[in-house]
Each structure stands twice: as C-alpha cells, then as structure tokens.
Length: 457
Ligand code: HEM
Ligand SMILES: *[C@@H]1O[C@H](CO)[C@@H](O)[C@H](O)[C@H]1NC(C)=O
Ligand SMILES: *[C@@H]1O[C@H](CO)[C@@H](O)[C@H](O)[C@H]1NC(C)=O
Ligand SMILES: CC(=O)N[C@H]1CO[C@H](CO)[C@@H](O)[C@@H]1O
Image (cartoon, rainbow, N blue to C red; front, side, top):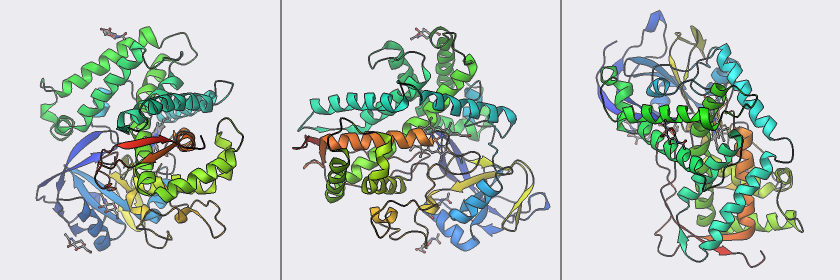
C-alpha cells in the first residue's frame, strides 16, 4: 500500500485522540481483501459518502494501522454480536493505556482478566442496587441537590453544563467510595478536579501527538501532567479508598477511573441534550409533564418502575438519545483473530470502528428519521416501543456496562425535574442550535436555560 497523507483528526471515545492520515490504497493486508478503494477525506461528513460508495464495511488507515468502519445496524450487529468473539478486542498502544494502571475494563483487550473485571464491575453495580441505600435512592438524593440549586436561580438564566456533569460524577463517586462524600468534601472536590484535568489532556492536542508520534513520548511535554495527576490519584487511593472492604484495592481503583471516564460525560451530555430539546419543543415538554402528573398523582417521588406507565416521556427520552448520538463511533474495537465479515476477510489486529451514528437515521428503520419526533418510539396506540436498532450503548460482549445505571439516571433525573420545573429558552439566548459538536463523546453546544416553578408543583 502507498499512502497519500492528509492530516485529519478523529476523536475517540474516552477522550483520547489520534491523527488520522487519509490514505490512498489498494488494500491487500495479509493477502486478505477488505475492500479496496480510493479514499481521501478531510471532513467527517465525507465518511458517509465513502460507505455509499464502498458498502457497509470499508477500510481506512489510522496512521499506519489498518482499520475497518462498520456502517449500519446490520453490519454492526453481525460483527459485535453474532461474531462477538472475534470482534471484541481493544487496541493497546494509545496514551490512555500508558497512563492508566492498573488497566480496567474499557481499555482491556479481550481476555480472561477483562472478563473478570467486567464481572466485578457489574457485580458492584448490582450489589449497590440492593438494600435501603439503593442506587435509586442515591440518584433521587442527587436530584434533590439539583432541585435546590435550581430553586436558588429561579427566574434567572443558568448554565446547566457544570450542574449535570457534577450530578453524573457524584452519583458514580457515591457508588464507588465506601463512604458517602458530600459536595463540599475535600476529597470529592479533589477527585473531580483531577478527573476533569486529565480528560482535558487526553482529549486535547497533546494526547493526539502522544498517540501519533511515539518518539515524543518520553519528552517532558504537557502530557506528562496527566501521568503525574494519575499517579497522585493512585497514591491517594491507599489512604482514602482502602477501608478493608472486600474489593481488591486495585480493582476498585481501576473501576473508579473507568466508571468516571465512561459514565460522566456520556450521561451528562445526554441530559444536556434532553433539556435542550425540551426547551426547543415546549409542546413536547408540556405533554411529558401532563403524563408525569397523571402517573405520579399523589406520590411523593418517582420510582424507576413508573417508567412502564410513562409511555410518552419514555419515548421522548429515547428520541433524545437518538438525537444526542453521544458516542458516535462507540469505543474502537479490535479483531482478535483472522476473521471474515459479510464476505470480506479481516486480519487479526485490525481496528474496528462501529459507526453507531449511522444506525440513527438509517432508512427503513424509523418513522421519521431526520427530525426530532417521539413518534419514532410510539406505536399506533401511543405505547412505547423500542426499535432494536437504537444502540447508543453499543452491543455484544463489550456493550456498555453502565447501561442500566445510565437509564435509571436519565429517567429519574428528567422526570423529577420536569415534574417540578418548567424549562424555558431565555429570551436573550439566540435561537437554539441543535447540532452536536463532533467528538469522541458528542456534546450539545453550550446553552443557558431559564427555570420556573410549575404552578402545580
Ligand atoms: C448515556 C450514557 C452512556 C452511554 C451513551 C454509554 C455508551 C457506551 C458505549 C458506546 C460503550 C462502548 C461499547 C463498545 O465498546 O462497543 C460503552 C462502554 C462502557 N461503558 Fe458506557 N455509556 C453510558 C454510561 C455509562 C455509565 C453511567 C457507566 C458507569 C457505570 C458506563 C460504563 C461503561 C464501561 C465500564 C464500558 C466498557 C465496557 C467494556 O469495554 O467491556 N457507561 N459505553
Ligand atoms: C458515520 O455515519 C454517519 C451517518 O451515515 C456519517 O455521516 C459519518 O461520516 C460516518 N462516520 C464515519 C467515521 O464513517
Ligand atoms: C458526498 O455526497 C453529497 C450528496 O450525496 C455530495 O453533495 C458531496 O459532494 C459528496 N462528497 C464527496 C467528497 O464526494
Ligand atoms: C485529598 C488528598 O488526600 N490529597 C493528597 C493526594 O496525594 C498527594 C501526594 O501524593 C497529596 O499531596 C495530596 O494532599
């Protein structure tokens, strides 16, 4: 293969970045045939054309690494679910791999130790759901804090970014720290601060350089700061997290990082998208509130079980996830052995990019693919239905480990806030811009919102 180099950057989930070098090639990797083509692209939009030209499985190079993009529900399901054993690896040579020790779940290659840690993570979440301090109660406790914050700013316009990020972050911290730390607690503040700074470094130019040019790695450049911070964090774990609980300390520490990296931005950005749309479509907001009032009539607080009766709000939340497209390219996978997919042979080690975005507007799957329309999730009787091709959490053995927690957070937070407040686009806020900012984790453009108490509340 010969390369014609165009510099391009693609942000990966997990806030690490790589340079992408557009290439011109006739693929002939290990004698296999992926899909040959002439491709050079400078913008993200043009990947879409590529799939039109070359079908739902097409190849490209990331630096000198071969990669294959999967387009559409059918190709993604065939690879990640039906051939889950072959398609569930992870690349091992990026900045995050070097910075984070011990390795947790998200970044681990497909192996028995990954499986063990994944099971441990699921168990932690599940155990937490039991008892009187259940996950649900913790989330509702966090919503109370949100309510207090919002009540303090009634009538003025507030910027919701930090509020939702902190909420998501604190919910996860509570699950992982033996004791409950409150908002003002030093360690929690310290931890959330370190976390934000590290993810900024991974996500920025320095992370990108680190991953693209191995020769730079040992130089005293700013990415060293990320390593130092993580080192500090790992020293603190001994004094702070080690309380003789039954979990091994290393396991707990790596879960802590994983859950934070994977669970904070994703959840917060979905919530941000949710309120952006609810303000832009006031009639949708009102209809949600009406149904919430009916179902919760006389009850103190919502419970996750109530979702089965709230068809319209459920449809709205799912439609929000479709619009949010939070992890457009999932986390990249890697092929664990020579395999084949829909007639193409793919050699071991090839990076797999599941294009989750491509499923969200796919022809033939949606009533109204190109607009925000909760009807996409309602049948003719107005009951909630979930088309199988909505996969914001990906699919197969690597599917998001926090899906249940995330769904619970989205539902409980949105419903509680909607029951109490009306959210209004501020008069001086310009027109809402609904286009997300492209990234590993997509986020809506920053916006402000005005909060009013609802007359019935
Ligand atoms: C709306 C919120 C969320 C979305 C859209 C989301 C999405 C995703 C996606 C697309 C993946 C990659 C799956 C793959 O490799 O195919 C993933 C993995 C993961 N997520 Fe989430 N996630 C969310 C919330 C959370 C939360 C709250 C947690 C924390 C408990 C979490 C923990 C994880 C972990 C640990 C993995 C790695 C699984 C593995 O590699 O085996 N996620 N998530
Ligand atoms: C993913 O699919 C969307 C929608 O078809 C497309 O616009 C985008 O360019 C694709 N991205 C990649 C990396 O193939
Ligand atoms: C991609 O497709 C769109 C419409 O199908 C077209 O307008 C655009 O020029 C195409 N881009 C390239 C690079 O072929
Ligand atoms: C909150 C806390 O314990 N912070 C400590 C973490 O560890 C570093 C040294 O490694 C201390 O300087 C911090 O005070």
